[in-house]
Length: 67
Image 1 (cartoon, helix red, strand yellow):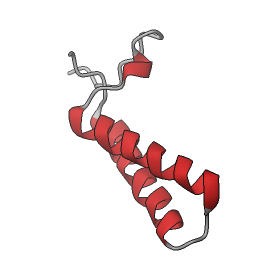
Image 2 (cartoon, one colour):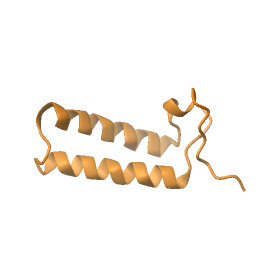
Image 3 (cartoon, helix red, strand yellow):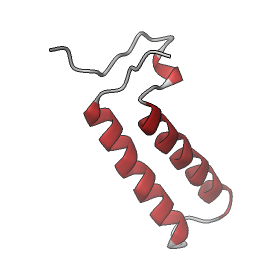
Image 4 (cartoon, helix red, strand yellow):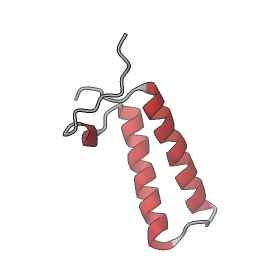
C-alpha cells in the first residue's frame, strides 16, 4: 500500500476528526447524523495514521509534496 497523503492533509483530517467527535460527545449533534459523524471521524483517524486514502486511488490524487 503506497502512501498518498501528505502532512497537511493528515493534520486537517485529524482536526476534523477531533471536531466531529467533540460535537457528538458534547451532544451538539445527536441521532443518526451523530453516528455518521463518529464513523466518519474514525475513518479520518485511520487514514491519517496509515497515510493512505483509498478514495484518492481512482482519481490519481497524491498530496505528498515532492522534494
